[in-house]
Image (cartoon, rainbow, N blue to C red; front, side, top):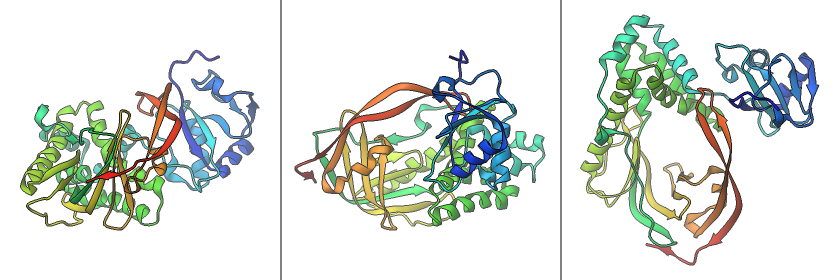
Length: 356
């Protein structure tokens, strides 16, 4: 068993990528691939179970996905010898694009460097700063738990600041606006064709880049971006003056608003997410909201694990309960440790009534 302390990253790949790697380099078959989840010294030896998993160094993975025409799946890493645990997934048509704080930050700064010198970029970051204040930290609000019921809230509107973090970069770096907007539009394109993996990739791009500012010692710039968004959110909630149902960083839902917003799809402006009933359920393990957005799509947000949400329909009074396995830990591409949450003993329940 390996004594390496950091678990290697895991990525789902297509059957095409899996077979191409096996056909390109020699490998060693192993009985249990998970004996090597912390890597091993001879990184140029590919270990595989031949059925579903293979471990390779990053530079060889990048070579294959580039060769097969998947540039968005390339992993940026200064060390060519970092290993990856790849899993064949026949349900995907191309490798899931990989995003991390470092990669997001590097992508954004590459765009900025087309219009600004490195010193100019530093100066812009250092001229948009704020001290940390509790009142203007990221704002979150969820309804409290009452009884074990689904609650229905009528006459609710939900608003969202359209690409708040992307807009922050555009305002700080106006000369790069056209290229930054192209990154936003690319995410919109993937959303329009139903490519969920790439939609999530570009949705997280600016969010991750903002978070990575802290790692790059631009904590006060991070504060500036987050607090500017929080100020706008709180100011707008106060103007609407209704019963707050939900708020999360750059969006909020409010019942019986006295004032309706003029909404638009422009970057940095509020757009209308829904104007309908919202359902809410909370138990000892999770909370979840459910509504139908302006395009007729059912949306669920909250702390409930995504892998069990398909079993839930608050509109029909159907909820679930489950237990969580927290024994597995992993490290993301930026070296931060996380716990992998795995639900089990999932029980679906039909509640007797929906409370208004």
